Length: 346
Image (tube, rainbow, N blue to C red):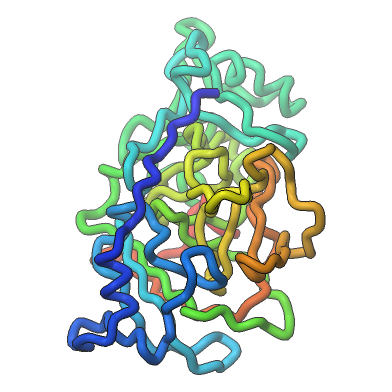
C-alpha cells in the first residue's frame, strides 16, 4: 500500500500569540486570559499550534459554551474546510481488474484486524469469496471494468442509508468538488478537558491535526448489505456530502512526532478536548495499558487516547470527558443538519 504523507508544518508563534495574548477581544479570539491557554506544547488539552498550517479557514476563537452535562466552560471554536490540508484525497476505487496497489485505495480487512487491505482490481474480482457471498459482482465480466460512482449524482445516490437500486454493486467514491460551495466543518471543543463521571459513546471521534474529521465507526453492515464498498484512500479516509473528507482509520498520513521521547505521534483531538495519539510509537510499540476508551495517562501528556489499528473500524472506544453539542455547520444551504450517510457515524 502506498501511503500519502501530509506535510507536518505547524502553525507558528503568530497563532500562539493570538490565542495566549491579552489583547483586543473584538474578534472573539483573545479571551485567553480567562481560558488560561498558556499550556505547554504537548501538555493536556487542545493546542491550536499543533495543527497543520492552513488547517483552519478562520482563526480559532475561544467562546463561552456549555457541555451536555450542563457545565459552563470555555471552548475552542475551530472552523475547517472539511478536507486534509496539504494533500489531495485519493485514489479510491480501481477502474478495471488490472489495477494494482499503486492505482487504488483501501478497505477494511474482513477479520477487523491489522492494516487495511489494498482495493485492487483483483480484490474486487474476489469479493464473492472474500465475503463468502456469491451475489457480489462489482465488475463487468466481458470488459473487466469496475463499476464505481463516477458522477456527483451517483456519489450522492449511493452515499446514503437507503442506497438507490442502480447504485448497488458499486465501489463508492466521491470528490471534494461535489460538495456545495463554501463547505465548512465547525467544532466546539473544551479548552480544558472536563473529566466526566461516566463514559460517553463515540459518535464523532474528533478533528485531525490536518483539519479533516476523525469519524466514528462506519456502518459496515449497511455498506456491505447494499453490495457496495465505501472505498478509502490509503490514508484511511473518504468523502461524502455531509462530512466532507473524513478518516475512519489512521495509517500514518497524519501525526506530529512528540519531542525526543519517541512517543506515538499526535494525530488529533477528541470532542472532549483530550488528545489522540497514533497506535504505535517510534519503536513500533503499542501502549502497555489502556482503559476501555483506549485511554492512558503519563506525566507529559496527561490523560489521552491511543488510536486502534486501521481495520478495527474504530479509533477510540469511548469518551472520558464532557462534550459540547456541535454546531452542525456544513456550509450554507440545505446540507446543514442533514442525517449522516452510510459512511458517516452510526
